[in-house]
Length: 111
Image 1 (cartoon, rainbow, N blue to C red):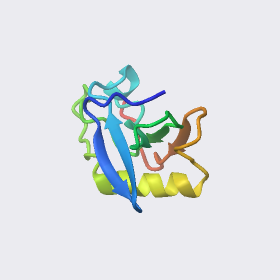
Image 2: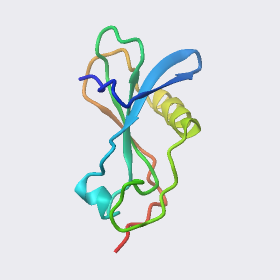
Image 3: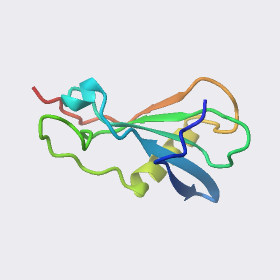
């Protein structure tokens, strides 16, 4: 599986290029602030498809429907997530199931 290039952003972490993307519209559970934002990261080489990194963030989706304050996901957050996932064994060049990284500690669901 590969990321849609439309709306994705490039980032270079430790000399390796990646692409990351946040879904523009929140999923139902994200729209109600019951679950935190998620974003996807893949190797930016564009050659063969590899394993996608799915990061579960610790903040609400900016497009939530209940008006909860949402901190933006910044490139520094994405870089930290990539480094953490690589340390836990994520290999973006190897094909396989998506690798999940949960960084949602501290997320408080809205009523």
